Length: 320
Image 1: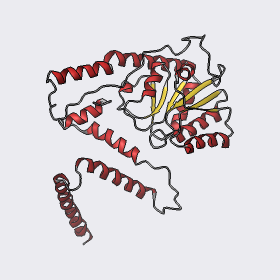
Image 2: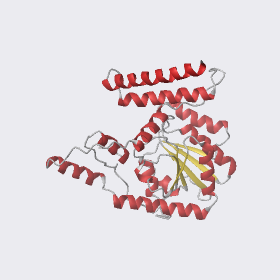
Image 3: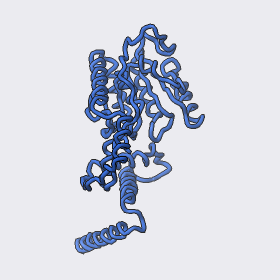
Image 4: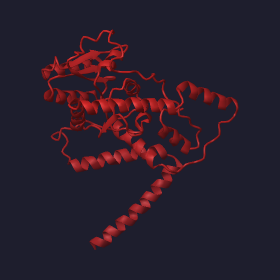
């Protein structure tokens, strides 16, 4: 069972019966004016715009530090915006970093650390924009919840996500591009018409997904019936791996992503650093398909040596 069609197709390519079953989804909700009787959270001033970031305070996947930088950019440009960080750190150090960042930049009234909330419903209800800085996900529940409330989302590029394959309502920017994410949020905040249009498209995209895809319960029941009736057949092998490779390398690149290094400590050019990084990523990717001590690895190594000897001979002849 997989959460994305890309993963399903990957396993199917290896002739493994695979089924796409989404996470449990929320019913569509009218985000604005759903209930004026419900009390507004004290940190959500009705006279200001509000951006929310929700997630685990973890920096390899969730990139909360970059989210803080984006919020800082927004606050330095627009005076009537409040940013909300919602989530808990894996250790006290992450929460300390958030509080220290807010204090160091004198943003106590502009960036609110809400901490862990058992329910973020009210935050979505009064939010104008949702920021998501994850660089790899399978089926992010926070995105589905934002879409169910019709809240426009600015997020890092993850084109394989099922919920945003139609490119409606969500604005993708290059991964780790703090400036670009800041610009897109500012553009929406300063254009009421465009933000409203984006909210409408978000709601439409979410309703369309619910209407055209099985629910998790329907998917599981269908799978159980197929197993009971022995109708689970081995899929035909598919050797079209281009999209699958791109997705896999995307995950692998982010897993190995490292923050900027101190050049004084490591005397190596940026170009050489990039080559080393690419080599490590390619090697890790290759070893998933051809583990060491396997026939596939030995065969690939012989071919590589043969190709290298040809290239080496040609270089020697040129020098002569």
